[in-house]
Image 1 (cartoon, protein in one colour):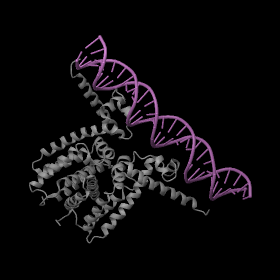
Image 2 (tube, each protein chain N blue to C red):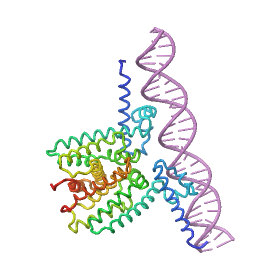
Image 3 (cartoon, protein in one colour):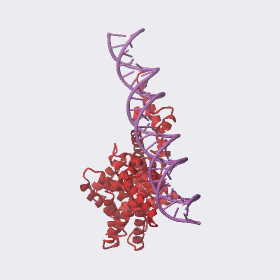
Image 4 (cartoon, chains in turn blue, red, green, purple):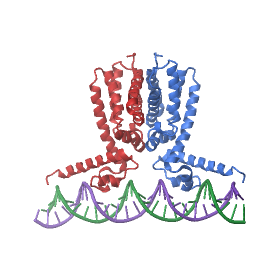
Length: 198
Length: 198
DNA sequence: AAGTTGACATACGCACCGTATGCGAGCATG
DNA sequence: CATGCTCGCATACGGTGCGTATGTCAACTT
């Protein structure tokens, strides 16, 4: 076996465990997800899990980092498709709302994550989502587009509103009909940050 | 022993269990709170708990209803102290932000509650807080003060932003310095709902 | 070729939840 | 007033799941 095979195997088992964890956490929730089942589903045991991630919370942390990175990539893409910086900001937020409609993201990132790991602003990467939004807002403030409020505070508010809206939409009886309402209200709310009415 | 003594005793044990649960859930979190410890702290056993509340989640539901009622009372009081309806609305929201600074409310209502019971809009009383905010917003829309957006959607957004802001403030290193920033940014954001700039 | 490291499996103890069962004090009934 | 039922709560039991300690085997070192 060539050199480096060991670490490749290691990466593979990590990937397998992460995949299994994403599925289990998304379907049953963090608390109800059994580590035995989870690991057995990919042909491993709890030994591999504790060796690679320390404990159950460590596994959740790793899953969240993965999801967070994926979310940020999609949101950034949405922003860069827009014409103006302000429109880009709105698109970025709408992207978050729509992303949060996925049950996987809701359950893991919005419900179990905060309960198990505490407030998102204290997470490992403090949530790349939040950082990205903060930077976008700061840029818009520097450009004179927005009122000179604290960028981090505004980002938290915007993020909280967007993700909570998504949670509400997804739990609604007819998500497809309330989604436009939520986005509409969100655009209206966000316009409060604008220096002059757009 | 006079008639009705039985039910009075019953109410008393319910109250004792609720108190113990509030403390335990607030300090250790829902998952880490032991039902044995919790009940023993007030001189009872798990038997009393399962008899009165069904299961651990039932106990949490009861605690949340209690906290929710308290929050709504305080928020309503804050609103009624204000001069104009719009100012009252803002005061109501600020009250929520400040209420959510209490560790008890954060841990139970904002972190564990959603994780265990699911989205707040699906809770027993669908959160009296949300209902109250929705009604306030609807009244302001009818009065022509706000843009005619969906009242429930706006309430969810506002509530989410406010409570998330509080979570952020409380987790910050210096809560007292970031709280004004959060409130400032919130007022700015909320003004987006206004029909004409105030 | 023998020792060491490291990735993972196995085995054990412990805590905890939910339920089934037991018990004693009040209320109804004859 | 005696008896049986109800009901609030305690006790006992089974099952499950986490974390850790220990074992094992392959790969690397020297």
